[in-house]
Every structure is written in C-alpha cells, then in structure tokens.
Image (cartoon, rainbow, N blue to C red; front, side):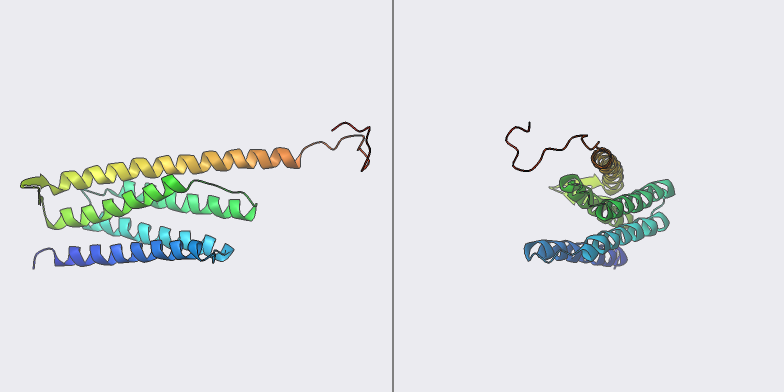
Length: 186
C-alpha cells in the first residue's frame, strides 16, 4: 500500500505528541507538577520534535532543508536551557500561549510533510490541493512561530533577569525605621 510508512510515522508521532500533552495536562490538573518534571518534560518534547525534523531532512530534503532543522533543533535546546536557568534562579517565564501554538504548528508541519511525501495531491472538499505546497507553507509558518516564540522567551527572560539583578543590588537605606515607630515615614 502506497504511503503506509508515512501513515505509520504520522500516527506514531501524533500518538507521542498526544501522550505528552495529556501527561502535562494531568500533572497540572492533579497538582503533581514537580521541578524535575518541569525540567524533563520540555526536554522530552524537544527530543521528539528534534528527532522528527532531523528525520524529515533525510526523508524530504526539498520540503525540510537541513538549515531549517538546525534552526529548530537549536531553538529547542536554547529555550530549554533558558528555562532551566530561569527555574534555577526562581524566575517565572509566563509564555504559555505562544509555546502551545508553536507546538501545535510544529506537529501540523511534521504530519503535513509526511503526508506530502506520500501524496502529492490532497482531495479536499471536492478539489485537489498540492500537498507539497501545503507542507511548505506549514514549514514556513512553523519556522516563523518558532522563532517568534524563542524571541519572546529571551525577551521575558531578559526582563526578569534585569529585574532580579536590580532587586539584588537595591541599596540598603542608611537609616532603617524601628519597628512600631509612629514617626517613621513609610
């Protein structure tokens, strides 16, 4: 059967992505979030995505050039390192929405490349669409959202780091008010 390998690869990738999403959702819902989980779960996500894009470079190099895979893999590990430093320093990086969008767009792009590799034309609503055109669009959208997400992580991290640095360097007042002193200025 034509396209069997691509369908199987897409199914395994989707199942792994879904399992990861359900795991994160259940951990948050059941209040079972741990520091180790906060560090290892994103690392597992990055490994899944990185493996997929590296594999796609070999499977469909015209759709996923090596330079795109290098950017995505580099982005994934840079952001993971940044998040690890933030956790270690007690910083909160609240960038959930664009991170979730990035993940969804990455999943769609991987599946669309797999499908375009097997089927050049896709029947949709009574018309035929070019699978490679859709996959190329998905890859470019994924690249844009991934880089925007990385920029946002670095911007929020930088802002939090500057704030934390200012707080650490805040000068101690020369005269400290005594507790319960009614004449002390607040």
